[in-house]
Amino acid sequence: MLQTCPPELCSIIKFLPNKVTFLWWLILIIVIFSLLFPPDFGGGATRAMNTARCLVNLGHEVRVITSVPHYPEGAPISKALRFYTENIEGMKVVRLPTIGLPHKGLFNRYMIYFWYAIFSFLALAICNGAEKVISFGPHPFVDVPSYLVKMATKSSLIVDMSDLWPETVNFEGHFINNLVQSIGCVLNRILLKHLCQSISVYNERALDFIVKHYDFKKRAVIVYNSVDTKSFVYDGRLKIRKESLTTICHKDIKDRFIVLYHGVIGPYQKLENVIKAAALEERNLGKALFVIVGEGEEKKKLLNLACSMHLKNTIILRKFDRDIVRKIVTESDLGLVPIVSRNPLTIYMAMPLKAVEFLAAGTPILVPRGSFIGSTVSAYFAGFEVDFGDPRNIYEAIRNSYLNFKRHEAMRERARRLAEERFSLDRIVTALRSIV
View (cartoon, rainbow, N blue to C red):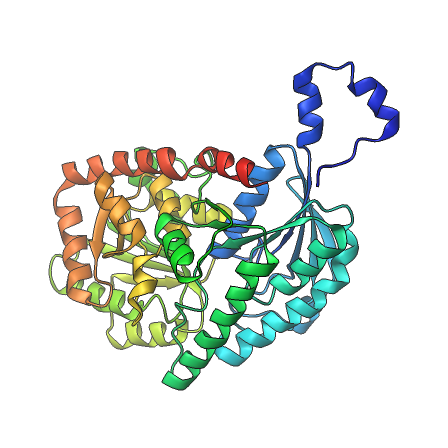
């Protein structure tokens, strides 16, 4: 429903110009449910943040119900069990306690999700007056409190499908995988058919699947994973100097071709294949330096592998805050956006957020062959599609990239253009305006 005009203002507003009157009715109270929200890192947190930022810029009042930062490595009890509020860029953010477990394994993840769903009821007071509720996940856990708020406030519920669940789950064990998918599909049908009024989806392929698989006939809007092109700048001089990368790597790397990965180090990224590609590179020309930044359940295995190979061209670092990440993305020469899965659907619809951040910085990328982001990058000549399950294929793409400098420079320009034309915050504002 639209926000009701206070009686004492009605007599004033009716004499105002039509444009001003329209802006009054445009202002909505929007409540966002999202387990992850900055300073948590990862695509889900950043997608929720970018959407919230755009809604604020449209003039809406945005309130966010999220958890204490803990992703992906967990958090100490002293920090995890806090409850506080803060203001981030004009948004009122409620931080709920979390159990602080690392995101590792099925049990840990579902415990974290259940905890958030239960504790979100502590923040229901902030939902008073809500006219739109947006559920960012994890689905379906966050959708229960979102739906109850929708019913209590007589608002409407928008579900953001930032990835496909449960179709793309990839658990060890055939029985568990099938069980989770079967239960998840039933819950999704209930959610999509009976609980929500509309959905936002991260690309056309995902929307097509949802419409056909779930016979979805309600309003749906495509909201790409977006990037603030004002924060991620493209400056060739920064790629030459590499000052931030030099600082965090503790060595002179000015003349090296920097291949960068930043983000979650988990089973879906299969970064051990990148380490094996680095070994191939070191045995040949040895021009590239591989820099891996992040945390996750596979990091220890990755460190052990790199150590056993005695690689001198690979540096594995801890995660850094967003300001530093923006700088090293800007200074890197080639970005890695790996996804490896036994489920072809995961690859087909893939659009990791780090891809558009690399593009905005004028950094060409390696992306999964056959993915949505892969076909887009290939069309713009802004990177290479590779099989991240094959270390030699990764190595050859990197080698081809740095051996042809003029082509690489052209790819930089096209990468930035792609980010501006398809994935900037300005481009998603229209979609958000239509859905709210």
